[in-house]
Length: 312
Image (cartoon, rainbow, N blue to C red; front, side, top):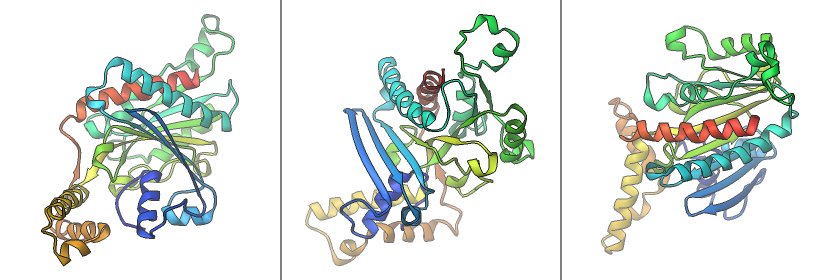
């Protein structure tokens, strides 16, 4: 498959299909698309066997991508509508693995002092936690209240402790039945930056999208099911350059000024060529948009509301 840096199963599937000129579904991968309205789209990718795993480099499981267009100018009504979609999709994944009253731990990965990586910790501040109330003030809660706890464990660079080591200790002590992990991702698409949410019931490898992979957070390592919620907040400079070159080629071809070189310069060739030029000079930056502060705040509201209504 193409070597684009992306954490999104949907983008990996699309790249694989393009590389192999496949028009139908890939063997081992089932897909479904649902258009909610002009600004909301849901794509479901299900990896069903080892062939699907090998094709897109994602474990067997379900991957749901919710695209929210025009998030930069989203109103309160738009944010609420998007959060309701998150609630619906997340609830389906939760119900596959645990019962209504089973305890849940919500984990916000990332560094709150680095804006593109701050989504996880910001969401944690908005989660409706109940574990302490059920233990010390059960009379103030409904009898059907689920036990919910939350933590933002920080990053290895500031704690000196692997995230897995922290979470393993917590899981072993408080024994949740399910863990929900929120993290920043890398995307192949510029337009998906802080405007898409990927839900997956296969866990997550923190830092993989920016080439800094840590130990995986999965059912195998934590001992309980792990649902990952990832939001793309960065993209490679090589990807931006490749996309810009695509637009240039299209413009030249529209004006009938194309030549053999431009016609033969395919998607992977552009990306590989640009990356080879940028990487040795340390110019292949990981890039985020100038509006990232506002986008993170809006996406934080979408994700936190979606989680709260799905688990309570």
